[in-house]
Length: 441
Ligand SMILES: Cc1ncc(COP(=O)(O)O)c(C=O)c1O
Image (cartoon, rainbow, N blue to C red; front, side):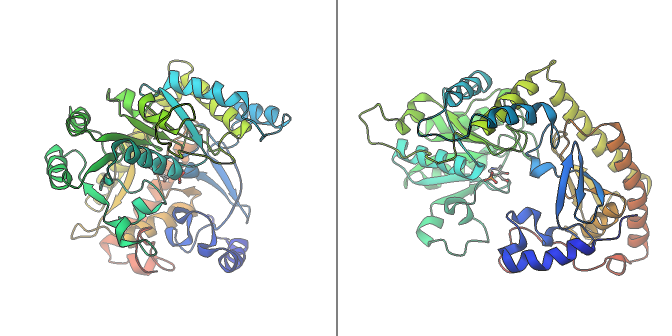
């Protein structure tokens, strides 16, 4: 049973004094975990991580979906180590940039040109800018059922955490519902007059598209001269190595990739139609778009990591992808079956797409229950499993799965007792976790 977080707690004080939020990603923040939890990781290997107190955990967060193969995955590390001997950043682009761009074009159905960057936010923002430049319109329609597209103002201004963002920016982003083509039609009609640049959405996130939905979105966009952007920062390479756009058979005008494409190393990409992408080029006589220009965009060893990761994903009839989908399904089915056996299925379930499922914890009135979620996390951590998210990787093998199922068994029995005896608050140490997107702390 893991209960010692002494070093983590000392370091927490220091980190919060030095760094706003104590770290560099809100989703990894202390407010996302129970009080009895590790604060800092020392190392990871495969699907396991070790914290500063020496505790070992199975990691179901996997770098917030970025680590698809496993932590410190040798074949990827080998190419990185080799490339580092050649230096990583020069006065001219490395030849590797064109080599990996060519690979992306072979890989992703809608890719005719490619620009690399270091994070997904820059990618989606660049795609939005390109759509605005190409259409000469300003309005962005974004799918409201999908939680996150970018840290930049066009998106954050559309959330409750909109402090510091001008009204003029906020008013340019509007929402539509996923899998509801009638809703999109209405929003397009309402904003057509003002001028719509793009529709941006994940092709699939917490649910898969209904039959024909993505094609109808594309048809609607084309009928109204709107650029369709698929944000595949999470879906790309996880749902399918050729992107969710390949899996669902609908190609957008622009799309963005990031997490998973380099097994946790920092590479993202905007890809799309040449007609749009080349506005960012220097060989045309139209008005220029300052597309993506970053000092580190072509960092060689990270591009090598992407190249190797994509190569491995294409191996053996997509065995990595098959493993990920099967692992997610096993975890989902086992959890739901256990909850139902214990008679607590109305309070908790894992739902969503098998390659990227998610937890739902509910109170007796059917509202989201953060207390119950936190108690679940607390008990799983005691049994050596960090499961704030359900992110299956190629390194979640039999031993990780069976340890997780054993932890489910012990944890859900505690939850059953807590629910039946109204003791959730009593058993929870510290505060419940909070939503990432909230106006006040
Ligand atoms: C769908 C989606 N798009 C874009 C981003 C932004 O990516 P990054 O954190 O690399 O900027 C995220 C991050 O979680 C995401 O989930």
